[in-house]
Length: 298
Ligand SMILES: NC(=O)c1ccc[n+]([C@@H]2O[C@H](COP(=O)([O-])OP(=O)(O)OC[C@H]3O[C@@H](n4cnc5c(N)ncnc54)[C@H](OP(=O)(O)O)[C@@H]3O)[C@@H](O)[C@H]2O)c1
Image 1 (cartoon, rainbow, N blue to C red):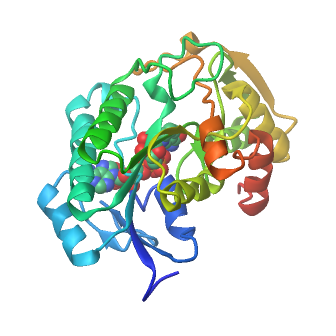
Image 2 (tube, rainbow, N blue to C red):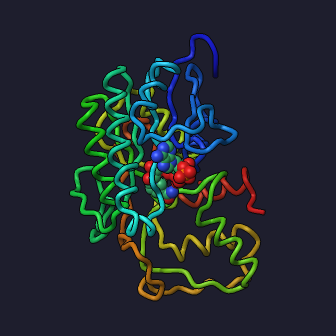
């Protein structure tokens, strides 16, 4: 919905995988105002660097009032963050703090998206919002500090929503990569010792709008139901895309050394969000099937 009478919501990261879906799914009565560094079909205000607090303030004044902000913009290059920690911190912590300050000044609710990478992955049962974070990577540490900054600057009017293993209609992600590699190579090796819950933006975006519409505050976990390893996820992807003949072999994380350490087990318990909305996100296999029906991988 747009135009007179609609409640405006600023969506940061509108050129990105999640922000773009949020812009498309504004519920009745809400109008999404998408912003990002780059231009994009769903970006109304391009060229806004959230690290520029004065420019951000102008957006609140000139394009508001906003009843809320759905904050998806982030430094998301997990491995590169290990060598670009200052930039990752500026975006994930300082810009998030500036945004939360803007929300506090202008009376806007803040829903800030965070990650399972705030946990160290040493658990063997799903993480609840009460579990203590202990990030293993620069990315995880900056996202955690961003959460804390948001809660501190806009107290009582901020929800942190941690999600994981995202994929959706736009952007680069695991199902697209696996599908392309399977078609090219006919044989794949995928790690079988990291567990999480694949989550589509198609499932997550409506949940984020609900968190805002219900004016929920505090920390929430938001992932599709059930869990698997990357290897199981890859097998499901090749089977669902007509490539079941491709051999997907399991391997260990240590065979693919990467700059950033990942949690071995970061399954999120999303019961608190399910109680808030009256329903959980779909089970991950169903969500994958729905996604592939809506957006077949080319
Ligand atoms: N993808 C996942 O699997 C996953 C898992 C858990 C949590 N999350 C969280 O979910 C949220 C959305 O993730 P996503 O995958 O949709 O990310 P994404 O596709 O990388 O989108 C993030 C957007 O933020 C923009 N951005 C970066 N720095 C900015 C700045 N200084 N000012 C304004 N915009 C800036 C990026 O622009 P450029 O591309 O031009 O830099 C990009 O368009 C993030 O908070 C992320 O941490 C993602």
